[in-house]
Image 1 (spheres, rainbow over the protein chains, first blue to last red):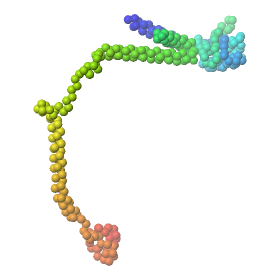
Image 2 (image 1 turned 30 degrees about the vertical axis):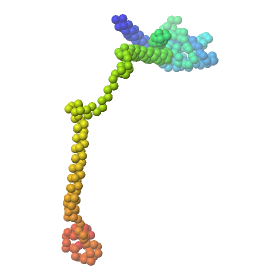
Image 3 (image 1 turned 90 degrees about the vertical axis):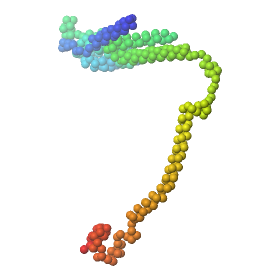
Image 4 (image 1 turned 180 degrees about the vertical axis):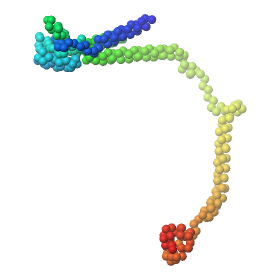
Length: 131
Length: 183
């Protein structure tokens, strides 16, 4: 009886995990107002020459922005602090695209580079006018 | 030590499975792939260990049961048993009235009958050959070619150019040449 209960509990956990993944990994597109954009702040550590850090980060951003079909706004890529970079994406990313973008930036796509997303937020024109 | 190995394996399986779920949840596909490979390798290793452990248990059970059922002192009993060697028991006078004698008699009878058949075949072949050869020779003489040729030679044709034209059978034998030269 205990063994049956253990199997049932395991199956329930797996089913709940699959349902959760299904809900979180949906690739639906939520329409955003025209003119919205997404700001990203990124902290980067590398095991290479520090002079290559910005170049490697730009390569990572160029790779990841293709997944969400958004462009980096021209001259928006800049250094915020030591190893911290910020850039802006247009058009703005909805919730699911933000998750995908964040996962891509945190992933080990570029060797010897680890990135942590400090901030990722989508700003609509109304929000920008209210600031 | 075995328990520690199993504990490490189970922990590795649970950890890699958990991280696999977390990385997929975070959209970190490269990390998820690496952890997934580790998860699969751990799973295969643990399953292999389970199968090997079960096989060892079965082997131990079989070995124990075989040892328990084996009667002790088998070699001594074999050596103590009287050795009885009775070759050709069917030749013994006491056994002649039994069916043991049937097969040797059958074999010997077959040998004798084969010899008689061979002798009959030889005698029949020797007596029949002379008559058969004579009959064949007579038949061959009847269908043999005549000593003289059936067709006149070219010299004979030239000598009697118009002599064979009257014989249709001869024209057939001579073929187109005779037909062309016939009137």
